[in-house]
Every structure is written in C-alpha cells, then in structure tokens.
Image 1 (cartoon, rainbow, N blue to C red):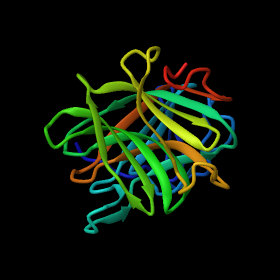
Image 2: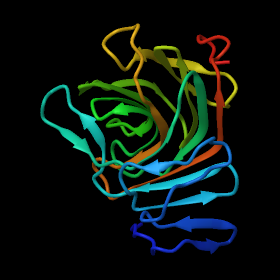
Image 3: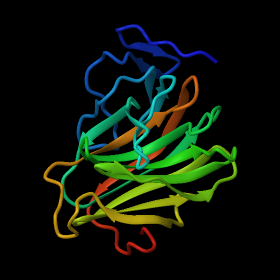
Image 4: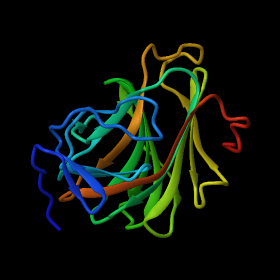
Amino acid sequence: MSYRKLPVLAVALGGVCLFSAESGPVTLKAIPSELHWNVRPASFSVQGDDALEIVAPRMTDRFTSPLGDTATHGAPWLLFDSAGDFVLDAKVTVGFRSFWDAGTLVIHADDRHWAKLCFEYSAKKQPTIVSVVTRGISDDSNAIPIDGNAVYLQIARLGHGFVFYASKDGRSWQVIRAFTLTDSAWESPAKLRVGFGSQSPSGEGCRTVFSEIRYRAGRVKDWASGD
C-alpha cells in the first residue's frame, strides 16, 4: 500500500472527514481543547465523534538512543494542552507491516522531556506493548506481547508522576510503568501536551486508528488498577 498527502482542502467522504496535513487545528468530541500537529503526517482523518486515523510517513520515529547512534524527531504527533491530573485512553488499532511500526499515546513537556506508550511490531514479529521515557536520552522498554492488531492504551497523570497502562478489553488495566518526566519526583513539568501518534521507523508508513477515545480531568481512584 502506498501513502500520499491529501489535498489542502478538507473533503467529506462516506461520513468521514478527511483533512490535509496543512489544515488548521483538529477537534475531537472527547478532547476538551484543540489539537495541533508537531510534525505533519502523510494523511489523517477524523471519523465520527470518537475516532482518529493517523498515517505516519515512511522511516519516521521519535527517539534519542541511549547508545548514542540515533536521534530522530520525525514521527507525527497530534497534541493538545493539558493541565493537572487526567486520564486519557483509547483503543489503538495498527496496520503492522514493518519492524517498529506503532501507534502511540504520548506526553510532551519539551523536546528533551517526553514519553510514549506504544503498540509496536517488535523485532520478533510480535505486536508488543512498548514504552519510551525521555529525559534528555530515551530509554526503551518492551513489556507484554499482544495477540492481534488492536489493544487499549491509557495514560494517567497523578501530580508529579505518570502511569502507563494497557488492556485487552478497555476495562481491566495492567500497569506498564510509572515514572516522572523530570529529574525530581517533586517537580512537575511547567507545560504539558498530550495526544496521539503513529510511527514507521523502518517501513514505508504506518496506519493507526484511535477509537473509543476518552479523556477526563482528575485522578484515577486506584493507580494500581487504573480505575
């Protein structure tokens, strides 16, 4: 399958609104503020009230290797401003074709402090939950393998910290990792943006669909369960 940029104007097609990467802010019913691109995707579409498709261009990633051999910032992220505690989750469906193709939920304080929760096609040819936390240099942590090409991902902010979760059904959540974006457990990022991404570090592009998107201000009742 090949990917192409869409024309500049928005087009209505079968109840789906398709936009060019050059169009203005994006709005989603579940998200309380406008979303903006950090990097333009190959294409994207807003589908109904709670679904978003992002197609990453070929050979795109966001990662600063701890081995010192890679630093890339080309993956498209669609971000919105967020303040205080929150919970963001979505069903993430990825058209896996090449190693490290992934759909991601992301948090971004600045270009040196960010994190992504990935549903990624591993080097072992297995869809896998992967997390990356960057404080100047990125780490890279593989968690659990997943059968199929869809999973639920969730991010929760609790004061100075964050928790990543994954779920097979969107109800029972498993903690993937808990972390901070700053060097101190008592320091919070001054500004934070949150959102959605797609990447294709070794391939010709990756299509990710985010559906059943939910966002709520406030803290999870039990961080260990994600509820």
